[in-house]
Amino acid sequence: MEVSMTQKKIAILGAGAIGSTIGGFFAKNGVDCTLIDMWPENVQQVRSNGLRVTTMEDEFVSHPGILHISDVSTRGDSYDIVILSVKSYDTEWSTHFIKPYLNQGSYVICAQNSINDDRIAAILGWTRVIGAVVTYGAGIYEPGHVNYTSPRERSPLTLGELNGLITPRINEAVDLLNNVSGGGVKSTSNLWGERWSKLCVNSMANAIAGVTGLKSAELREVESSRHISIRIAAEVVQVALANGVDVQPISGVPPQMFVDAVSDESIMGEVEGILMSGAKEIGIGRPSLAQDLLKGRKIEVDYLNGYVSKKGSELGIPTPVNDAIRQLAHRVARKEIEPSVENLQLIK
Image (cartoon, rainbow, N blue to C red; front, side, top):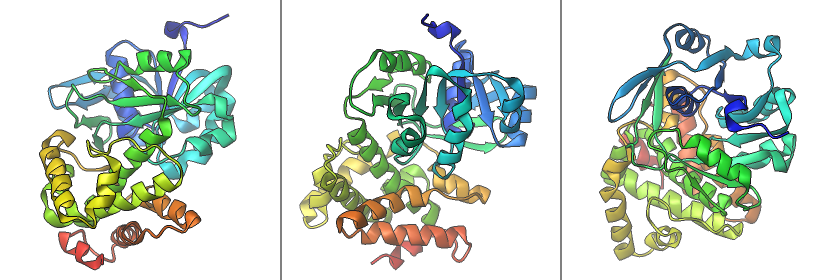
């Protein structure tokens, strides 16, 4: 017997910026869900006082259910839909952790940075995973309070099956996630092209923000960071194309333009113009890697620029700029150097 959406049990594993945003909007709009998190102070704050969500337009407090991860086994609950929003380096163990709490027809929506769908599918099976490309900005700097830094009219997510089919459950998941912000969630038959496009956006911004201390919009406004980001993008596109991926436009720029910009000044100027014109639209926050550095947390750079380097190495494609920014980000994380725009001069 098919279970209706109103009867389905929904869990969000990982209540950082991505998961808290989804959980906060779900609860506001009457979607019954349970956040599962590893941060004790966050769990206690949300449980006692609710989850505060500050957007660019307003602020609200909602009351999603929340469990500390250590309490899940004591409840005996199982879930029909799990939204996985942990850090990339926590992907495998988190997937193994939640597997016993899935029902026969359950599926997991991978809402993370990087490209982790195949790693999750290797544990759960390829038919139990849906990819969610996160296209909104958010930050969480204190327990129980998430800042949503994208305008309401921006589509927050793009969903796709790993095999490219538009299935009934994709439509179901789109309807569910349309409760986030102003809705407008999209479905795609080209998940991998969307994934690589988003990986490119993250690789252009996250590590550079951590290395320089610049905020999201400033990364496009400062010439040196803008130039490095374009060189990073060119390498990402070359690796993706060599892997047979139909890469979608990146921040409104056709992928090949980034490659051509590296050797053509006129195209470089055109790409710069597009990026600068969109600076105000990308939000007022900091990319997640920069947030992690501020909190003294482990960073995801090995799953962003490092992922590009790894895939490039497998195909014999050099990725010197991605290699260099990854190394610099680790140096900042180890406190060997302080964040500064001057650090970009270390990249040849």
